Length: 138
Image 1 (tube, rainbow, N blue to C red):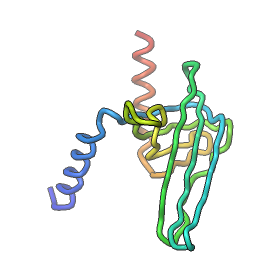
Image 2: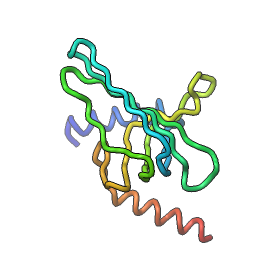
Image 3: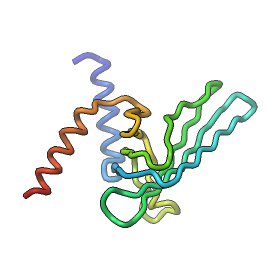
Image 4: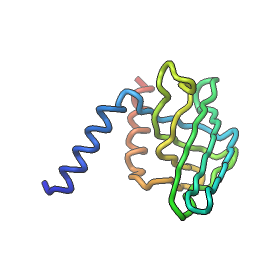
């Protein structure tokens, strides 16, 4: 195990230890999308996205937020429209805080257009779905 692998493992373990109980994922159909882009003197550019999802199962709605800041370059975001199927991976809000029901998104996978913010292995999704359907059948 090299130095780079040790550092990666250390940082991932620290992240899971700090946020492990808040890590969550949500999937469903997009009801509403609101994208706001701002620029401060052309130096700092930011994007704020608010999403409202209707889950595949259940009657409630899920509110999600994504924020990104970059220096000089425009932050990238994928094309999302109402009616698209999404999987959102992120952190649920802290209990007792103002926006505790909002999920802070770290990655969004659009299943309709087959694109995602940060690339990941989609075969893991297929395995998880197969296991979930087997569990439902029991």
